[in-house]
Length: 545
Ligand code: GLN
Image (cartoon, rainbow, N blue to C red; front, side, top):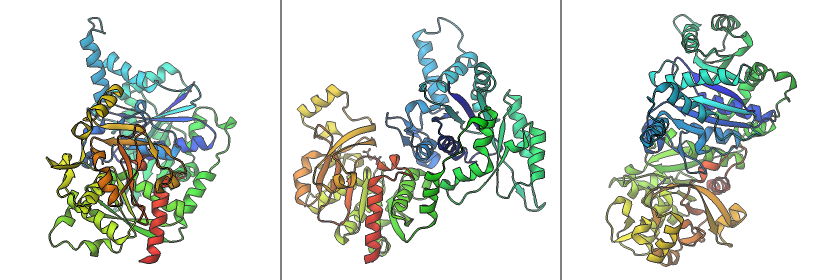
């Protein structure tokens, strides 16, 4: 049976619990264990799909089409285990299910209450969909202990721990140990209070992870151990790391995985960790042999969390080529000002990327940057909305005046639109049979067939791929001939040949647009081939500039 590790946070939010959970999972993997990571989010949204990137950062999409918290992206990047719908739940989803069951009469007239109905639903989520081979399930609880909205989760964890029996679960509490400059001291009191709050809810943590900006002196470690009722070695100091990819090694040195295994009474029988994968990652990251600058022309450029997976995939592409990747975030809207000097901004860049996005704002600026990349032979990567912009740009270059997307309003030339707006009757009928009629989001993994002699099939090393999608609009295949005459070739299509998945320019050094989100599947120890190839092209470009 799998063992369970619960991770909570105290004192403040943004302590890096998600990275800690992902790192612990990576360390357990390095000792040969099989892990699964999941996140319990106490907010009332059913999922983060409708939340603004400004509020919540990126929405991470899984193969099975779930729109989830960006921490699941860290989980997958650090472990290589594909995240699933069943790895993220919110209070909103729990209540939605309970209320639907109540309306159906499933409760047979009982009064439906937080305890036991909500707590039971949380407990069954925690233990659902776990394969028999799994050794550890790591559950991170969002928010901070003491929040009203997280109380049902704490109560469910208390009950769950009691039910599965002592020794089968470990609670890790993450806190902040602030440094008071005036006193010249680290302060443990907030940690003491936070642990007291947690124990008052019936959860005595076995391990306390202390985020601090200064090394934690032995005396303070002993004090936390004494007041919080844990072994001194179970007070794990966690200083800021130089890179997120240095976090696993740092926690390993601080003894986190060893303490977890000791708490389960497994330490004596455990393998020593094999950290070679992470050593290689850090070597590539910290010993680059050059650098490139990539311009990302987007909308949420003030908030890098909105493009978390993209940022990481670019870094991974750098690791594949042993170069440091500098990202210059460029606000597409600024390119729309009449006096904007676009060449001055784009000339110093070694490659240009237009990422995914929603809505019309900044679209003309994105199209202008596509024109620049096409005309100047600068490597260009268009992702989702970025591919759609590349197609509209090509249509306009081919003389299709007013080419646009119906996402931006009515247009006489819908180069991008909902499939119900442009697909033939027979095409739609075929799609209807599969239940995929568009209009709602196309979410999750879909296969694509690549042309045999294309640039992308050379990059992937094959002609059949599967990538994750999150979009509503599609490039209109009726424009295919006109775009191909302009040099933009449709080199990847959905297997039924109806939906464009990839476009490329064979007469350009590196010009690729993809309807999906390859960044979601890139890992530091397994960079996505498109990103590795894109950065390689940027390195070549850097030798020309
Ligand atoms: N807004 C576009 C669509 O819905 C692109 C979405 C995206 O880039 N993720 O099709």
